[in-house]
Length: 518
Image 1: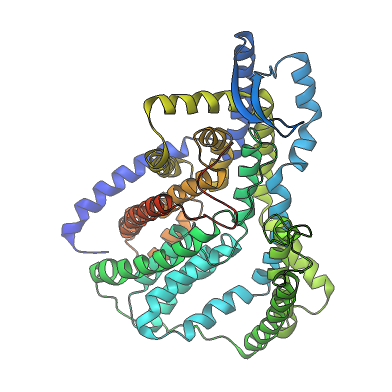
Image 2: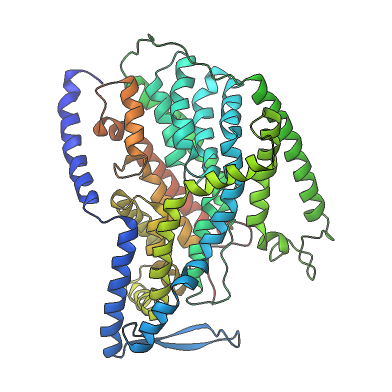
């Protein structure tokens, strides 16, 4: 990719990265990992019960709703009663797993937008109208926004980033880097809510209810922070692309056939239909929400928080994607009848089949871990230990962000990591005065920052292939060395933003705050 002087560095970086890759590959598949964790939970619950382990903390009584001292003992999963519980609760553990329904519902809507080609057309439309001077900013921004459809950006926008830069007579690898930085590094930034937000919120809710059975984390729990992060990551990603990445790339010979980012006439017609449908939907929602007597406001207080709208926001998110998607499909000819709509939904659900397998085993581990009370005991004792050593507030959050960064190198699947970490850290940090939304946000910052440099990330091989299309000598080291400036600066910038947010005491989202008061 570059001259001979850079080759030794490339070899050394490959050596280190290969070591990381081998260590990460030694870990079991996430589904198997949850089985192992469930088995470990059973064994530990047996010995902890024999030792009569227990803990007392101030919490919310599930029956009275009052705050009072609550004592919990370890539940022995290997007792006869525990064995009966495990074999009879498998189905209910899965069907009652909070993230299952939320993700399934949102995917029904997103799959129509994606399957009809609406998302791809929107991205290309936005780029075609962008002045050349703002191309980098637009690519990074669209990468961030593509996260509303989960991993669609990896498949659609990253290769499109190279095409966009080539159309502007700029180095295609710089376009790949900018798009990849937005899609993967910008995972904790967006102006809209995406399919990942209900998933995180569901896991955080189940973890929080270990201490407070009435606590619910909404998908909007990190929304305000995400909105500000969108502009920050777009600005930083643009500066790094233009000032650091592209100047270091060797001259590119534009010998390939020019690609077009223009959309077709049928796509334009579809977008017109989608725009009209989206506008009608927004107007109807505004009529139901904006007036103080709106039907979706709280009927007793008239507020939006704790209202039918907030309780049903996952359903309204689904409609936000589904209605314009269907309109686009009919306008572009991709949808001809109702069978096409259900087929697109089916394809979308098929696309998350691996997630459903993972979540089945994650649900069992979470249920067994909660039933054993080990999470509560570990969280309370861990919180007391952190209090004793004085590790609270901002220092604790920053260390948690850095811990997540390191774990992400070896366990890059964000949902798998949060399913493992939430039952421990959410209640622990609640004991230390931090809300589940705050803990979730700190996790998401650490996870996003190192997404783009871990070779074990599921789409990393695809990214390497994209790089090799424009430089046959590119490999793992080339991709990581290119993306490392984004990762480092994103992390530092997010930590600074987190510190400012914490000190000012800004809400993280609607009704979501930093400090938790029992």
